[in-house]
Amino acid sequence: MTQVKAAQTPSDSTPRLYGGTGTRRVTVRDIAAAKQRGEKWPMLTAYDALTASAFDDAGIPVLLVGDSAGNCHLGYDTTVPVTVEELLVLSSAVVRGTRRALVVSDLPFGSYQEGPVQALRTATRFMKEAGSGAIKLEGGERTLPQTSALVQAGIPVMAHLGLTPQSVHAFGGYPVQGRGEEAAQRLLNDAKAAESAGAFALVLELVPAELAAQITEQLRIPTIGIGAGPDCDAQVLVWTDMAGMTAGRTPRFVKRYADMRGALTEAATAFAQDVAGGAYPTEEHSFH
Ligand code: KIV
Image (tube, rainbow, N blue to C red):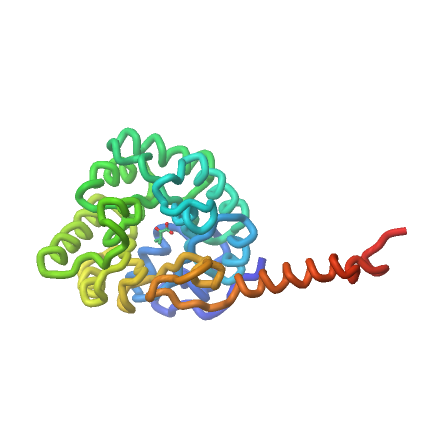
């Protein structure tokens, strides 16, 4: 697979996360080094081997097998119904499709909320059966015992604060989080708690840009923004939103870099018309 080649940062022997010379799997140490040198980096979701291999070729250093697979791959309305078995299959495929990216797997709703023992049991399956390099779970203070238990067991944990989609029914939708002084302070405390429990990175979803900037400045671990403004250390998008594969409206924070849905529909229509009209297959596609 092609790797993007570019200069290394002179003051640091670790290859840059994006655009560097590294070809081995990205690790959480590389991610810590990127924060130290102030490198901004991209993360995308992935749910299958082919798409993941394209993102690996593009040099995306971290791929998240998010439970957004529920909405974007499995046809559910929310992330709530996604199961461990489903994400294990998708995570294994993404690991098989990549050589360089750090593959982070979401712990689905109901697979870690009972406590540290359940969280450890689930996370262990992702590390052993899928070959994931890290896991992500939602919550700050409320899931600290889970984060601590995983970190102590040697499992890298990415925390997720702000709009945590597994709580969609409690939120009553997908509103911006951390607005107002009290909510902002709570989010900041949650972020610091996740860091002190040993999380290696923190996703901030749908948070005011000013608050995300403040959290990013106060943490030693990188923040990964999604609808959290430009000052986070990294940015993540759901790949189907980023590439224009998602049907219908996408959230305001999404920037669409392609029209995959349009391209696929066009290709399928052309194929169907060729078959119906007898234009495919021709002699060139036939065996004798
Ligand atoms: O499941 C997911 O894709 C996520 C990202 C939106 C961060 O959690």
